[in-house]
Image 1 (spheres, rainbow over the protein chains, first blue to last red):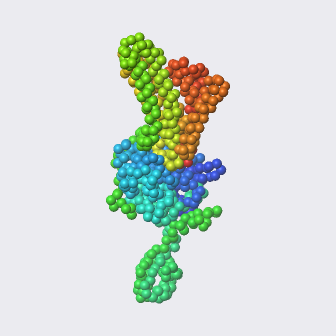
Image 2: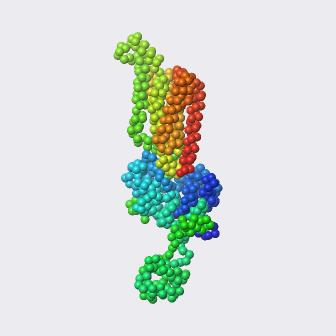
Image 3: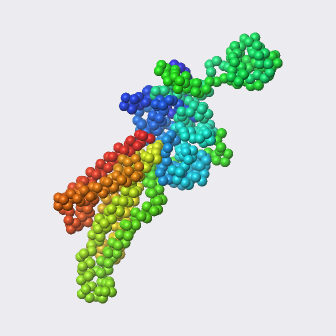
Length: 326
Length: 302
């Protein structure tokens, strides 16, 4: 835990705080001394199969009892019966698998679940229409949910999680089984909830681009413990600052000018030039000056970041026995 | 960005009621959902409804004859009319009509319970509804109680409502409220028996549903439990010529309990009624033990 990227306990006003959580199924250890604090805002929960993501979600909802440790979610303790009921009012859960209430229409499902969460009947009904409008389920809301397409079912699950307007949403594979259009719509909704509506999200997903697009922070689980955690911006920032430059004009001349000024430039895909910046305060300005001197124009300059996938793989491989290559 | 140019996210401005009992909301939703299926409702409740009319008419006839209102064939006040009234008073007892109704309609009322109860838990599991329920502030007990109340409602509709209709007809047809004065205990007996009957069968049916993965399987299993135990007990009783073998089935025990509750020694079943109570208590306890265990697994599997 000496790696500052792994240490993630110091978070102001955490919405989820977990200390030394352990859970085993027989001889299989699902979570091992898991400690983390979840900052408000959208957070992605990543990890390979069997890493403990689903167990963590169940523990957060109070559906499982931990063997050791404690957790606090939205100020509630899931270990106590009263705390469990309180936290389920404060949390919205969108399950991964297919789930609906048989024999009910979309609006009936959402309003029934609203009533179960403590909304009055009239409130539950009007609120159901609001959230169904938000997720884009219109006339079809009056049809039996069994007849819905996969995309509509997925949006219905999001709507039921929102019906009581919770501060924290636990979204388990929100884009699972969606076609590209449906996936884009779902990601738009998740992004909107996390970035515009001020919801705290815990997005459990196998799809790194989904997490990268919708979340600010990420937690990577490996074998029941936190392998990596932090803000995506921090984690994807490369240690050596580099830029990728697209040159218009005499490319070789610009490369010679770079060499002459002591830059160890490299070839990049697409005919671009990778330039390491060694910390000189005005180095980007210096590139423009060199370009002007070489008689070329700089069409684009972009900072090189590593992808979340690279971070994910590195996180898993960080310790002995890491699942390299996944 | 979300395509929310017209559909923006609106904050909930109302208040949550933490004390609201979830089981009431769930059972209300369950009853409303089942009541949407009009054809099964019509088909399943038609036989008890028709029987209610017939038994009510018999009761009405009894009190009419007793009051001297005779059919034209008997020709008004005459020795024949007096004999008819006497026979009616002796042979037609309201409590017997209610018990007869239960015995005659037991297959149909069990059909009602099987139909409405078979899918209550099995279909929830098949559709993954438990994922939605148990992420709400709903305890296992509340879930079970809601499912029980849903089925109990439909069962009571099949057994209590006809009994109360017959009692109401008897009350209104009897001269000077004589039914209430002389046989008033039939009303609480009717309520007690209906609650007992509906409660026990609902528990057993829910347990069967919780053990099944689909409504169809639960229906088949329920028929096996209801019909086969009944048939075996009757068969063994005839083979051994000993009526006590009727105790092997829940129906036989309910027959004995009905005789005891309504005070009808003529039912012909003479074993100690405590055995029957013990038997149905055991069946109910087993059913609830199964339910608690299955729903615990259901919650953990969420």
